[in-house]
Length: 119
Image (cartoon, rainbow, N blue to C red):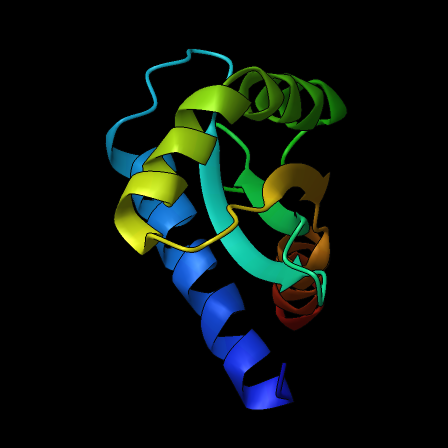
């Protein structure tokens, strides 16, 4: 499968999962989540879904918030998998695996340090 095609598949999965998490997932463990990236295996059997989680105050999330969110996403695997199958109509729907992406946390901490230095 060509690299460009894989990127389109990854982006389509990111969009569907992101929309489902934002609009339809009612698990109270799942906090303020953004699906930041998806990496699908070349055989389309697995998709690594990377998420960032904002803290309740809009800042970096706490370890417990991240753990709870990942637990909630993992328990919603079946729901998200069926949503993906229904919307993308692929021959094979990849199994979703969720991972925490700390890029947003690092950016928020850096912004906080810059603001503290300027004051």
